[in-house]
Length: 108
Image (tube, rainbow, N blue to C red):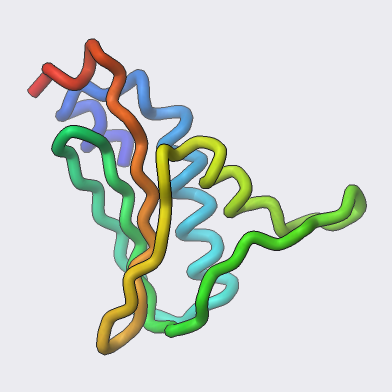
């Protein structure tokens, strides 16, 4: 992820993208089944996609102060313009879209 963002000269998005990718991949490892695949797409925005072999619907949980987990999708939602799920024949894709900064939108 870092190498690809550097190739696209989107280093300014690295901190938020790292959290988004970490949460999506971590959720797939914990709650889904393999195989797992990460894909980054750049167009007018940056889209992070994580594919897994489960058809389980991801949902935002209400975590209490004492819970050690349950905040991942809250973070994804807060750091992304939007996020969602696409269902496929062999699993699903969870995606999160981040806005490009005005400066980075014109870099290639």
